[in-house]
Length: 342
Image (cartoon, rainbow, N blue to C red; front, side, top):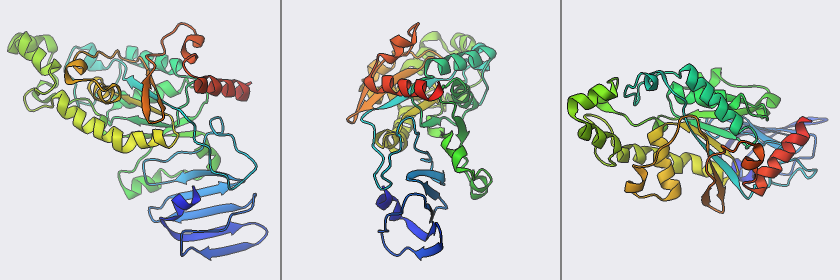
């Protein structure tokens, strides 16, 4: 793990113990640090990694993959140079945002940025209750407020009580001003990455129009074709195929590597961007995906194991036993939560 990080290092290594010693790093190797020492490593992208008593976590990084080792998921051991054991399965949670103000008004929303209704807020909170014992190490949302509200409200219900924090990497100033200086606070945080590639399908000239009035104006068949075909876009808008190209590419490049590294991920996004991702996960055809319906505020769970996505459906059972009978890994995580919180 150390060697993987050190190949980018251009700064200095500082050992803090009974004495203070500075070493200039000139290669990709470094001696093991005794337990109780602190290591500070400065990266060329201004990321700072810290290790204290054998636990390594990110203090701050400009890259979007900022995260820390959750002691519930990976308990520390007494051997400081042992790498973190990667879990053999990770969780992927998909949540379509709760009802928005334009959903309520039956308007085409697309990429217009409108918030949740009171019902949407309640749906997001209920979604959080349903995933409150499923591990979440990172959160990805679209750039739209309704998806971000859904993610934040859902995490208020999680028993781990970590705080979701939106990562601001849009400028050097934004990164500097949002820096966190407490390692302990970082350990109790979950990075939230907002990406426009996960936005809802852009509906072009239909955005802001009433759906019923649009059907009356253009004809029900034409509007149905725009909404439910795979490769026919509305005027100046995106087809589902176009939406899938950006959403799936982002998933492959940015989210799937996090799952492969052992992190559990939640995605809060939109009907069409999530349908696109599910098309990839379930290997659906273009004809199968156009008939896929996703309810607002209902989490869908996948297990990522041995580079395969295993769909577990939505955790909607009336009792938690019905949810956590899914896998041994999830049951163990909940057991550890129970032990930690009681």
